[in-house]
Amino acid sequence: MWIFFAFLAPAFYSIAEVFDNFLANKKFKKLLTLVFYTSLFNLIFIPVLFLFDPPQIPPLDTLPIFVILGFISIGYLYPYYKGLQSDDTSIAISFFAIGRLFIPVLAFLIVGEVLDLVQYIGIALIVTSVIALGLHHTKAKFRFSKAIWHIGLAAFILAFEGVLFKLLFDDGVSVSTAIGGEAAIALILALSLLAFHRVRHDIKASLPTFIRLSPLFLLEEMLTFFGLAAEAYAISLTSVSVVKGITMISPFYLLIFAWLGRGLFPSVFKEDLHKGHLLKKILFFAILLSGVILLRE
Image (cartoon, rainbow, N blue to C red; front, side):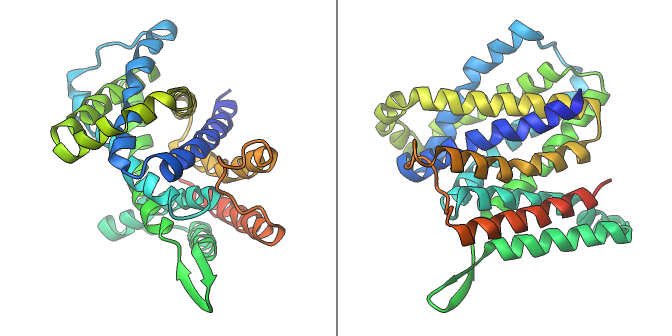
C-alpha cells in the first residue's frame, strides 16, 4: 500500500509545481508576499484533517520538532520560488535531488562514516546529471543555472523534513497530527511577516491579485497538501530514504503534464519541449533517478 502513496505524492507535487511556477514568474515578483498568501491556506486544510483523522495533542517533548518543521515549511519556499524563476520548471525541481547528497556527505564529514562503492556511484550519477542539466550554453559561453543554488538550498532545508516526520511517527504521533502541527506553526510564522513594513505594504497592494487568483491558489495548495499527506503516510510505513527517492520522479510527471497541457495552457508551463532539449532532459533525469536509487540507506 505504501508504494501507491509514494508514487502518488510526486504526481500531486508536479502539478502544484506548474502552478507555483506560474505564480512566481507571472504574478508575484515579491516572493515573501507569495509565501504569505500560500501559507494562509493552512487555515482551510488544518480543519479538513479533523474530517478524516482528527489530530491529537502531541507529547510535550515533541514540540521542538514541530517548531522546526514549521520553520522548514516556510523556510524552503523562498529559495524554491526563486529557483522556479531561474530555469525550466522540470529542470529546477530536478535539483531537489541535491538533497539526497547531504546526509551521506555530512555523515562522512562529521562522524567519518564511509559509504559503499554503489552509494559513491549513486553520488557520482547525481552530481553528473545535475551539472549537465544546470550547465547552459549561451553566446559561446557556459554558465550554471541559478536554480541549482536556489533549489539546492531549498533541498537542504527539506532534507530534514522526512527525518523529523519519521521521528514523530516512531514516537507514536499520527500522520494527521504531524501534518496539522507543522501547518499550524507554519501559519503562525507566515502571519509574523506582517510585522515587516515593506512586506506588509506589498501584501496589501497584491490583495486584489490574490483575490482574483484565489481559485488557482486553492487548487495549488490542495495539491501540495495531498502530496505531503501521501508522502508522510508512505514514510510512516517504510524507509524515509525509499520514499524520498521515489519523489524524485516528479520531473518525469511534469514533462508528461507539460506535453499534454502545452496547447491548452501555454502561459502556465515554463518548459522547453523542443526535441533536442526534451531528449536531454529525459536522459539526465533517468541518470539522476538511477543515482538516487543507488544512494539508498
